[in-house]
Length: 151
Image 1 (cartoon, rainbow, N blue to C red):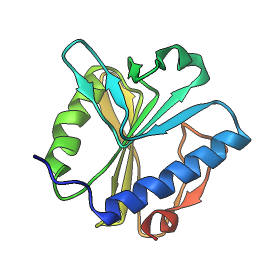
Image 2: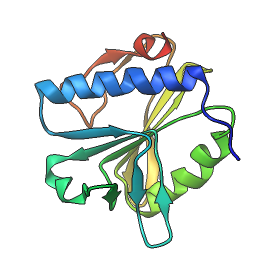
Image 3: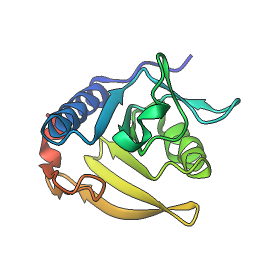
Image 4: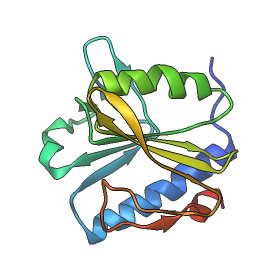
């Protein structure tokens, strides 16, 4: 059994969901969900990202209990027990099923990597650390300091 996420992980997830939810209240272009939420990529591939964003254009993916198909964004927050799964296995799976954006947050290293799918592979589009400002291309009107994730 995988140990539950630690407090650094939980704080980062909580803060990021607050940032995105607040942004989406001001700019209602989609919905954000946090774990536990299943994302069904295929009959045999079901994942549970820490955060999931689904744009209004893809809102038909949102079902009663799951997201059925590839959302616009998945976010994985690393913790001691999930680094290999999140960085390697799930990362490749998200690319395979054409999830356009994948963010990897490491609260221990205080680092965030933003990836965008280009030609079936993720390209690193931003790597931020410490208290740097993040302006994700997926949300053109959003800008926040990483400092908010490390409280």
